[in-house]
Length: 348
Length: 236
Image (cartoon, rainbow over all chains, first blue to last red):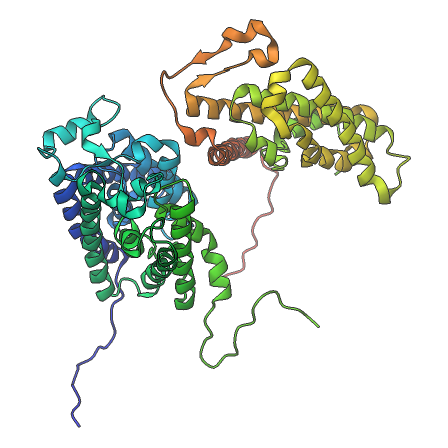
């Protein structure tokens, strides 16, 4: 019998917040790069504008709260929020949209609730939901994949579109996302929709699927690094797959297939980067599974019967509300203790 | 609380110290629902003042005749009658505003401020203080309504005092001030904006209260202190 000899000390140093956040930011890079490759410079500009304004807001609000801004700025949490928001916003969104978003995320959704660790809602998604209900026009225009444009959108054109005074991006550059288009396909059957105008919707969907897979790769890296556990993504994606399979199996001509649900919109990005936020999700493993299932159900319901095309932000926010409740009912039993009693104690 | 309060105390309580919206957090449903613009807020505020004064007056008058056990149904009945009066008055004189405010006029019956004041103040105090309390609480509530309405109208659509003619007749038609042209921020008009705006107003009040308290303490510090007993030496 051979023992591997490992010299002491055997203690691990826990990962610092700074390190965790840094790893997550790194993991978004493949997805961000793919977005840039497919949809042009818009996403990178978004991320840069969001990070610059977000860090500025964080510093100002921390000064107003009479805290030392430096440690909080260095822990990368504000930066991560801004990067996630920048990725979620449509490319070539006007700069004021992005800055409003970071203001809401950092000042209102994060710092007014007490800063990192005390925010009940995912800051990036709170900001996204606010922008979506306030500026539906700007928020639902997504750039056409560069491969479908005669000339791609150059960096200069992108910057003019973002910072220019023009109200909207030229229409030639933008079109509905696959989920949006499918939702408003009208009387068309599902396969007619995908095939119309020379397979255009299908081509757009392929671009989205590529970006989604790139984000999933980043997410798997985080899973491997044990930044989060598998429970939330697996429960969320599993629920969404089962639900979409059920309806697709029953009526394939009117309901989107599981592929469409999993590989378009923000599903994979949300599953790995948004729903796994340790502050706003449920904490126990069992709780995380319920949390993920809830998000999956809500995404399917809102996408299929709601009035908004995508639903990751709303679903995550709604389940953030429910997280304390889930935690209450899923307290794990500590070893050697009786099973926790559920509900209100009934004294005899 | 002493049995009788001076009119200054009643006024200060209604407008600031015990403001129904900012401190007691009562009547939030109409407060958050109709404060999308100044005119809506003012319309509902005036109706609420009317009902508050009327109900406090009547409750105070009958306070010695109503048995303890049935006081709440009796109060609600009185309040409901006044709300019906306010509703009919609004139908008669500001019909369009009545249509805009819709269900929130009848819902004044369930406004906790009114039942709260009837039970907590009017049923224990003489008629004139009770009416004053109702009026001051109503003014305090209306001021918050109008402030929130102005904030949301300005942030949401960039105007102030739009459609004031609904309340003040044709001469108010040109009171509208356009602060930002071609501007819209739907969030402020929608209910979530009301919650955020309300939170900010409460925070503002707390800041002002903090400053007032600090100033009062500074003033107290300036006064000559009563002589303090010398500390008894306990060591060495």
